[in-house]
Image (cartoon, rainbow, N blue to C red; front, side):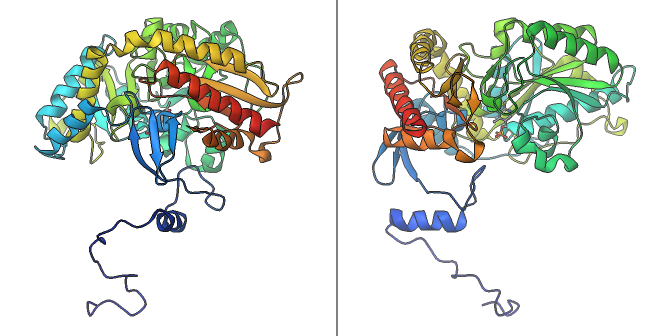
Length: 468
Ligand SMILES: *Cc1c(COP(=O)(O)O)cnc(C)c1O
């Protein structure tokens, strides 16, 4: 013990090396309960499940049980687990260097990745700011948009506010929850955040509030009214294109994105698109915004950016935004923001390999039959007694569990039917994660048609078990 260490503040065990044999699964489960504080999880009710391995669409627990990865490991896995080319890219980069800072320094892998991202993204996006997770990609866009107006020509420093969509989800950091609208996540922290101006989502109806969704025309009229009323004070509008995933798979009516983008352009309000969940093929195209021919001022990417291998995010933006930040040191126009692991080369190496896999394995071309197969299951399951509504966008589907199909009456939230359905489907070989009482299917894009059948069957049985 070092002499300065007061008695009672000694570590539980001296720093030793790991034992030869790994700890047994039971011991690990008890340590998991004892020490690991899991995200979005009530720890008093937590039941450990330890995944030890993955292969393709499958995950294997410490007891050797196999599960289909029905949530793509929280929406980020793209090409399946242990893809040989991604594994090889990671190992090859580890053989060079694991991390170099991108604060005023660079490395070849990250530069090449930035270039490739610009090549595959919608036209006009030329500049790439790397960070570590989706929330940080959003914070980056919000801060860049804000600072942009103070340095634009002429400066418009009154443009400090953001417009966001109701029930939006943009991450869990304070800026991101300021523009977020899923109340059960954000209400607690409202006193800590800034207030965004809200447009009701046209993708509902909202299972939480039961409010019917406004029509496309009503939503666009609201956007137009807000942009007019708040003229001169708006920095940007932020939205998830085509589908608001975390809200409960709210699929927007076609034309909403295009309409919002046109209004933003007309009122000179910057458009931030959050493709953290939908980027990299989820909706059937590389980026969701392609489907309505929209190129935003900021494109935020994360989850699928490294195909679900490593934490990395990117905020892409335009020459116009970039130019407003140029100047000499003494001009004080620098973007003083950064994340220590931004541009990490291991992540960039896997991201590059993932783009190669997209190309060489013709991943986007492989999606239509998978989306159709899922559609068949979604249609069938929409007829289940306690499924009140279904929504699908590409390889992503949500099922609303309801107490009474005729009246669409929700279950009391205390009954946790969504979670119960997902836990029940584990017994039938699928790992799923619900959004409240919405059961979600979001597999890796590499899932096969047979595996889609298995996943749907396990989901259906889970829903039946939990709603009987
Ligand atoms: C997951 C998600 C985020 C936040 O990403 P993190 O990596 O979890 O911080 C932001 N926006 C959307 C649409 C997401 O789905």
